[in-house]
Length: 79
Image (tube, one colour):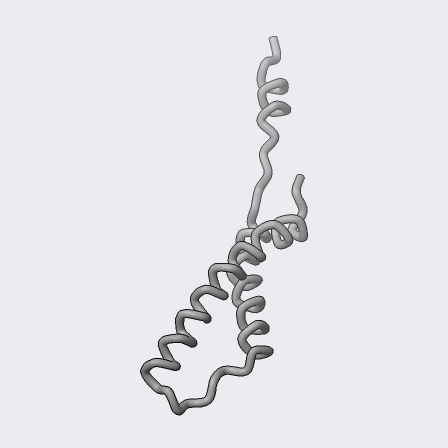
């Protein structure tokens, strides 16, 4: 059965990539609409991206249920 850690390691980077694209888009929008406002510090942006990614993946990793169909098929064929 896959562990919670394996699910987080597999899925969190995918979500981090998507959230990074959103952060870049929001940053570009803010630079165009409000050119004199200060930018978000990069450390805060990266930290926010990873925290958001882990929070999105965590419920899936906790409630994931692995079903081995081969074992289920073999145990159901009792004569």
